[in-house]
Length: 558
Ligand SMILES: Cc1cc2nc3c(=O)[nH]c(=O)nc-3n(C[C@H](O)[C@H](O)[C@H](O)COP(=O)(O)OP(=O)(O)OC[C@H]3O[C@@H](n4cnc5c(N)ncnc54)[C@H](O)[C@@H]3O)c2cc1C
Image 1 (cartoon, protein in one colour):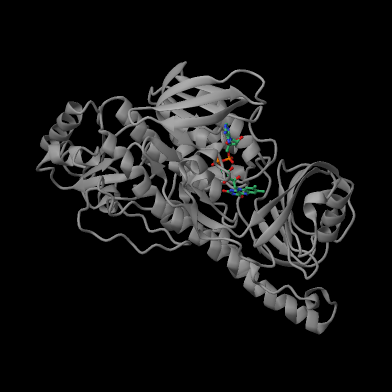
Image 2 (cartoon, rainbow, N blue to C red):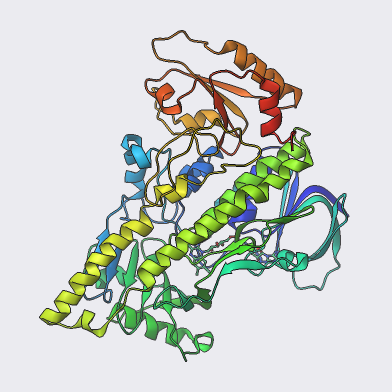
């Protein structure tokens, strides 16, 4: 029998991120995944900026950015009738190398430590796995399947077995079980929790069955007579599809809409070539690496993200249509939210009740983000793609101009989303101490930095070139801000009181004193308490009752 504080079922990005969050906080966990190793297929191909900031918090954002596309590969998103014919619209975005330097000079909505990175999930997962495995208490077992479990009230009993079922089961006794087991989550099913929301939405693109092809062809770039992009989207009456570069050289992920009456589940590599050629509008030599079908058109969230000692994260908790690239990113943030809470409980810093805030904080975010993905899918997928679009005539030209106008607006709606990535908030959470201020309105394309408790702390680059977030690290931080010309060490009484209150709960509160110009105005208060998941929990001029503040944010008042 294995006795472990946390059993994680599923080694996709959500489960692997949770293993990192727990390992970094000396909270032992066992992760099992039925597959022999991390994902082979490219799957998600966009890592959002907030996710990159979380990877940076763990010290591996630079490793992620070094993978995927070569550092000088454009990350443009471009729209065509067919990839080898008319270009309709384009959003030019920086290369990975430019992203690292550009972000230092960006402000407003893009005031951040990291920009997004265009990288296939298949490259992200091995980095996450390697970093999780370096922690002594983390045991990662690919090739192991969870067969069943029982919540016993005081603990969970679960049975795992080497995948295939020919070897005996092993019993795991865990304090908590986390289902990070993807869209078909057996954990969610065993709990009897269904998805709610919208499903089965029909659109010309990103609504209905899709055919995914992962292929290798060194010819693609040479054959497309347009500027290089990271994602190529085809809009024509015959077949709508996208092609995303996986390695920037010869590997591509391709997703095409399947039409009524087509039996794509029976399609072979030869069919894959036929469909790719149709969408490209020209022939290429290609080696098919894998084909599969999947369904777009979901905007689903589990009825409940937790029951008893069992939690759901990632696709097990919500199912997206990939527009906006939010499924995997929302899963990573679930893990970030749950990770520090499980660790706080393990170390006796917080009561069991703190874990209840996982579902109450994350379910509204899952609803918000699935809603945004649905809005993006409607914007692109309901655009009528007529035969006129490809006609070499004045009427065809006019049709292309109309489509260009729409797609040029759409691409900025879907792919310039600082508001979605930085603007998720936990207002109203019982472990957030409201100061009565109202945060800016939620908008997918605009993020207005604010230290109003409940959201991401505003970012700033410091005089020594470091990111403010690098000073915060993995634990609780108290940001103490003073004006550049003012006395240093302001707020000493409160700092000592808050540190003492935190220490009485076993929390080492890190004090970060800064006097950079503009910081105090940005945070609008000299004291800001920041959670381990980089969320403002409290801010103020004074902490008159430091114990009450600390006890509320750790869940002792629940
Ligand atoms: C074609 C495609 C394109 C996509 N594009 C994007 C995109 O651009 N951006 C984006 O954000 N998202 C995208 N997604 C979605 C993204 O891939 C998922 O949101 C992401 O993989 C979810 O991660 P996860 O860790 O929650 O689940 P998964 O990655 O599904 O991992 C779940 C794991 O659980 C394991 N498992 C299941 N049952 C058991 C069991 N009983 N015992 C042990 N292990 C088990 C599975 O083997 C699997 O490895 C795309 C998905 C697809 C299919």
